[in-house]
Image (tube, rainbow, N blue to C red; front, side):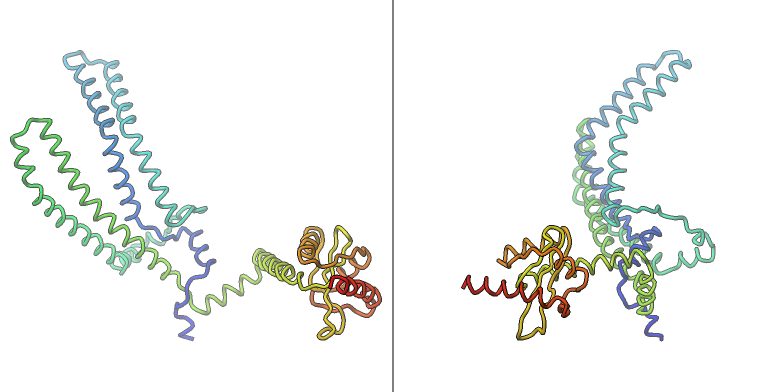
Length: 350
């Protein structure tokens, strides 16, 4: 009994789907943060001129009011211009961030029909303390400490490699100094970005590993799940559909082995086979109506199998016999005439 309770089995598709419906998904915030920082940096690299130009225009606009009398109209004008300039300058960046958050989350766990739910049990202070000192939180704290330590070390190394730029900056003019500062910021951002991307890749795989580990099931849970699924009408319907598809596929594969196909001629088709060394009577190898009937006839033509039109016999064979079932005595006479004709055709072709 103890062995059965051990969660050693991989989660079923239903277990994963149920967890997803409850908002329990493998979500790595490191991936989202890395994507935002990476593409945000690219945006600033190519479009920083637009942002800084907007800020410059705003500053020039503000300087124009120096020495003027302040009133409600002036305040409104300054406030409106400031807000609109800030929106125009930052809206593309905010839009990019929102898109990136959506895309990275969607790529990790797909589209959630049910939103992430607030679990009031998590507000329990006792459980909260357990979570704080739990293994998962300890790993998160260790990961954060490790990341910050590596960032500090790398920043120090970058600083050591670029210290000459700091010294040269002292003797330069304002614009040259500003460009040097931007260059230094670029070095620091590149180093930080590389570290964050590496951590994001590692965290992505660790998050998925621990997520699926947390969903592992015991053998008994899997048995119980299948028992519950057996009574589900949707599952029954899906199983029945799959069985019918497999049955139809097997029938189509058996049609080329038939000796003759008896048709309605348009709505029914029954493929018959008779091997006197094996069978005591002719048997049905495939049958179908409408589209399936057309498919059976097409395969028969491709394999040069005779097609005999006999509406009454085709309907009777279809309704009374199953696939692989031999014909009863009531069909002997009619089938004997048909097989006699078919064997004569085969002799003539030889």
